[in-house]
Length: 491
Ligand SMILES: [Zn+2]
Image 1 (cartoon, rainbow, N blue to C red):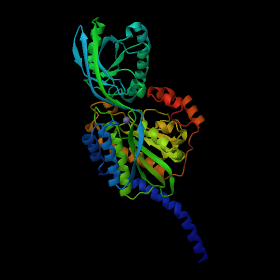
Image 2 (cartoon, rainbow, N blue to C red; image 1 turned 135 degrees about the vertical axis):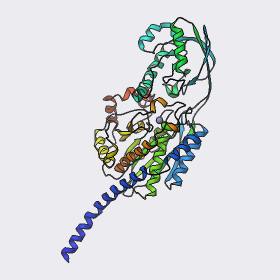
Image 3 (tube, helix red, strand yellow; image 1 turned 30 degrees about the horizontal axis):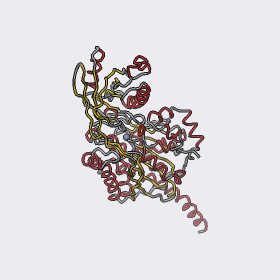
Image 4 (cartoon, rainbow, N blue to C red; image 1 turned 90 degrees about the horizontal axis):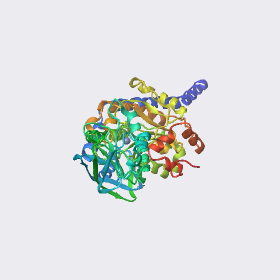
């Protein structure tokens, strides 16, 4: 009897952790199966994109998107709040007209780059700015002064993909600073997408921009360049009407499933809810918003309780300077030490092939391990570099372990920020597969007791110095905030 009792006690002691692990493994399998099956994820995405549509922060559509997302969590019985934060300034294009005149006259389709200033019938010579390289500006000399500079851009299609997109940001930032240095009146970028498609990229100085900046249809830009290069003289006239204003309030949507064992430890999964207004923000980033809402919904439906608290964050103000996640990091500063991970999803519906692990080799092994339940959807490969351009940024400079899903470009870059970013571009089957992959990683972190330390200020500085972070931060107009101590960990 005594022996029997002892054996029983030993078995009980072993059984507690063993059964938890088994349950956790079971939960991952159940959740994956549910996400691969029939769920409302596509319906949600269609509602957000077709019904609410483009939803720039500061617009009424954006407010409707916030209410819509909160109600989706509420209907799924996931605890949800909205958290108000301040946007630095209001900017929305109202209308733009552009006209080429001089030796030859024709109208061109144009859009303003966000944070472009307003101008009324601003007429000036249109000058061939070449590709806007340093050499091109040397050749231009004084000719750039008080002129509209037309800049030729390389084509961005599905073949060039994301690498081309990052180059576009990086080039634009250098071109704009050369143009302003040379005394140009404004910059007119040739659209990098053919067939009259135009798109919005932020002015490279963000909220601090003080110049008129436009993107015009590729075909007419080429026509203008051919004319200029055959010694025709052209003028450019633009009217840019903007709804602009000072500070205002926007909201993040924060939903939560509290942890059963370590509720103070937080695994945060985020995607931005806002979009630009030309398209309906399907690839960027409705698809990942719908994915996170659906993962939360299926977890509650299956009664899956993680050991750590899971927070689903639908950010706002991302397109206008990664503002929502920045303000979250400020508002939750006291909790940041307890953020085990901040994950971001923002590359459309191409196949998830791994994660950017931010230059923290310790994260690579963890992510590898947590992907094992979905090994059949691989192969997976982690890319251990820090990247700037989405909502992992403020976590990165706060020293919080952060990852960003690496996804095949598929059709992301060619539709990015353009009128063509609509529901029909989303790969619905890949969305289901990506949901399963994301959920495996989410539960992996949420059911683990491994915790990476938050990096100190010195460690963040050394990460910046040993990688390409500084130039990436400059390209995305966020370097000054870090350098001036407005953002990131400085203690
Ligand atoms: Zn995005």
